[in-house]
Image (cartoon, rainbow, N blue to C red):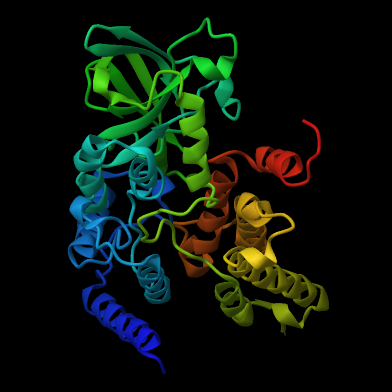
Length: 400
C-alpha cells in the first residue's frame, strides 16, 4: 500500500469515528428528507447547529480555500466525508443553495471582496441562501424573467415576484436574476445577476404548502426593495451567462460544491430491504416474478448511473460526447429516483395509500413521503422536459 492510499484510508477511519461520536440523536420531531422540505424554526436551528459542527470539525468545504473558511485540500477528502455521511445516515447540511450553487459560483468568478464577505458564512450556516430565478409566469423560461432592477444612485430598486424560493423565509441572501434593461435587443442581454440581501425593506415571503403537508418553498415579493449597488455580480447584462453557470452547479454538471448531504440518500438496497419483509396474503412480494423483474430493472439502472458517474471522471472514456454524462446526470438520477420510490409504495398494495401520522403506515410513511418529495427534484434546476431538450441540442446536435 502506497503512502497516499494509506493516508486516505486513515482519513476515512478518522471521519467515520467522528461521525459515530457526533451523530445527533433523534430530536423528537420530523426531520426533512432534503433541503426542499425545511419548513419550521425547529428544523432550521437543529440543522444549522449540525452543519456548523461539521464545518468546525473541518469536514465541510474541504476543497475551498483556507482563507475563506475551507481546508484547501484535494476534493477527494470531501468525497470521503460525504460517503461516510451517507453510510452513517447523519442529518443533511441544509444550506444547499449556498454550499452547492452560490458558493461555487462566488469561488469561481467572484471578486476577492465577495469571497471574503460571503463564503465563510455559507460554510458555517450563519448565512442561509435562497435562489430567485423562477417567476409565477416564467418557471422554466428564465429568459423572459420580468422582475425589474432599476439603478437609483447607490442602490438598485427591485420590483417583481419570484416563486419556488427554497428556504426563502429563512435566508439572509438570494442569488437573484432580474431585468435591468427591458429595451435590450436580445432578451437575455437585459438580465443582470445580484447577490441580494433578504432583510431589505420591501421584501416579503409567503410559504407554500406542499402535497406532503410540509413547507419548503416560498413566494417572494419585491415592492420597491432597495439593495446596495455593489450587490450586482459581474457587469450589468451578465445575468444570463452567470445564471447558466449557476445551473451547471445545480444540475451536477460542474464541480465546486462544498459537500455535505443535500438529501437523505435512498438507494436500491433500502428498497430491497423493505421488499424482503412485504407479503401479499401467504406469499412474499418478491415471490411474484413480475415484481422481481421490475426490481432487477431498477437495480441495473442504478448501477448504470453509478458507473456513468465514474466514467465521466475519465476524459478518455467520454471523448466522443464529452458533455453527455454531466448534462444528463440530473435527468437520469431524478427520474430514476421518482420511479424507484413509486415502485416501493406500489409494492405495499393498499397500504401504499397510508401516510405519515397513520399508525398503520409502513416505516411511518417514509416511502410515501419520499415519493411525493421526489417530484421537486425533477422540476428544480430545469424540468425533466427542459433537461431532455438540453441533451438533444447540446449533446446530440439536434435543432431547437
